[in-house]
Image 1 (cartoon, rainbow, N blue to C red):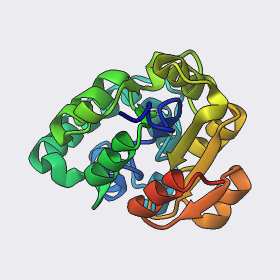
Image 2: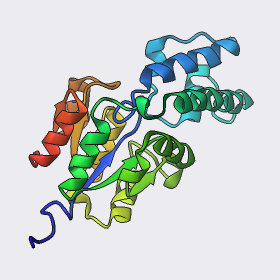
Image 3: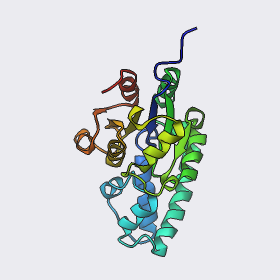
Amino acid sequence: MSGAPAAADRGVILDLDGTLADTPAAIATITAEVLAAMGTAVSRGAILSTVGRPLPASLAGLLGVPVEDPRVAEATEEYGRRFGAHVRAAGPRLLYPGVLEGLDRLSAAGFRLAMATSKVEKAARAIAELTGLDTRLTVIAGDDSVERGKPHPDMALHVARGLGIPPERCVVIGDGVPDAEMGRAAGMTVIGVSYGVSGPDELMRAGADTVVDSFPAAVTAVLDGHP
């Protein structure tokens, strides 16, 4: 019998929207519809620039009001209803090609897997269950799992503790600038993915060690020990 896998003491911390789940387009469409119904027209680009931030903060910014404004709670509730229906209808099809297979490759190699998302933890867990991610993740953390969310290091460090792995032995994979900034601040390796909301240059400036253009390529980078 061989010993434990060489990667058994390493962790991979994954973003959700734009990294595991092909949700940015739906987020933009649903957000625009919700805000239009409230009398506010917002461009697609403006909406996409908020992906990766907590939903109430994003909606408050798009509405141009404080997060405590009652309209933010109204928009958040309606967005949650519509986005939840979208996720339930899509199921595993919500994920980018190769995600489940890639996670299985990482698990087989001994990596422990976790999710760190700006969604609230309850919503993140619901999506994980509907898409099949839940059986592959040891830890699921959301914006409300810690005092300070992305781009602060708190969530990444919280997840590393949950995995029982030192931060320097963890890799963050994400498509957003806040993901890269979080991972860098936590002292972790960062692999950016350019198929979500941020381009390669943005991700590198934010602290990514490398940027790839598909989830399978991100898996290969991890298995190859990048950097």
